Image (cartoon, rainbow, N blue to C red; front, side, top):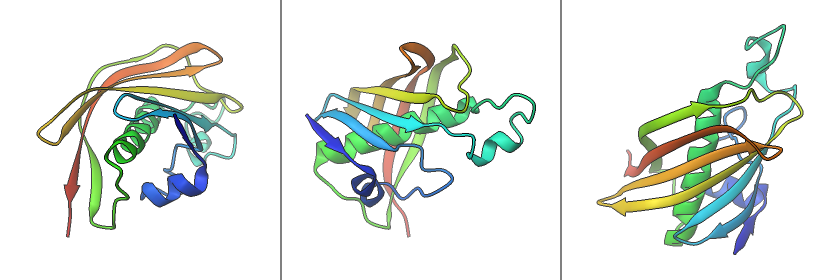
Amino acid sequence: MTTMDIHQILKLLPHRYPILLVDRVLEVELGKRIRAIKNVTINEPFFTGHFPHRPVMPGVLMLEAMAQSAALLSFATQGITPDDKTVYYFAGIDGARFKRPVEPGDQLVMDVTLERAKAGIYKFKGCTTVGGEVACEAELMCTMRQVG
């Protein structure tokens, strides 16, 4: 089992504020699963418009947080540090379900499991919880590509 702090995450993911959605990795079981967290604060830029009277984290950003966690699992499993020409893309999202709203002050816990890796396509099962309650779940497919 491995952990990662924000400095290690920044070395692996190209994302930066406001789209970096993983603050810490609590556990990594290479080739199997990852548990990561995102601390949600009122300072998030999306809360200004989603929604001004009742701030709620957009569901697509919960999916993105799971995908970023999946990328970290893939990089750790392969023992690679991606360069500026490596991009980790969504290839598909299936069965996305949103079970509870995520609000300022919540801590998202992303549990992502590698289901299959074949021909450069990775399939993951992801579940995001807040305080033990499921907020979002989905099957994610991702792929790594060289650009430029």
